[in-house]
Amino acid sequence: MKSATSDTANTLPLNAKPLQLTPAERSALRARAHALNPVVMVGNAGLTDSVLLEAHRALISHELIKIRLLGGERDERRSISDSFCERLGAAPVQQIGKVLVIYRPR
Figure 1 (cartoon, helix red, strand yellow):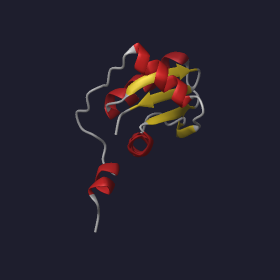
Figure 2 (tube, helix red, strand yellow):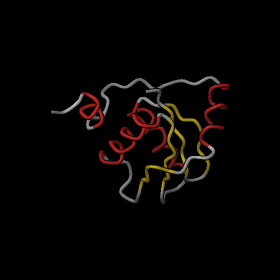
Figure 3 (cartoon, one colour):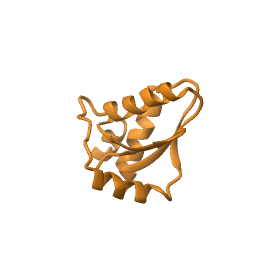
Figure 4 (cartoon, helix red, strand yellow):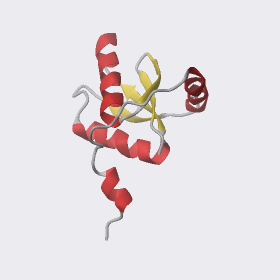
């Protein structure tokens, strides 16, 4: 018997609204994210459905995650960051180099 949580974890959210954070919320989330390690890595294949699904599962479990973006130029990494947040209904917290931090409340 499957639970509702496992069904939710195996499908991407549809029509997710991007989340907006206040500067104070963003600052608090940056502080919480400092000790985190990346849980999702985006390789040379870019932003695939399997990468999005893995990030979705991580957000269900943790709500605040780090993502490592391997390869790519600065503009490409920025567009991947925007796509992550748009497709998952998350908010960008911080991006430093090839590491992205995103937040979506449970």
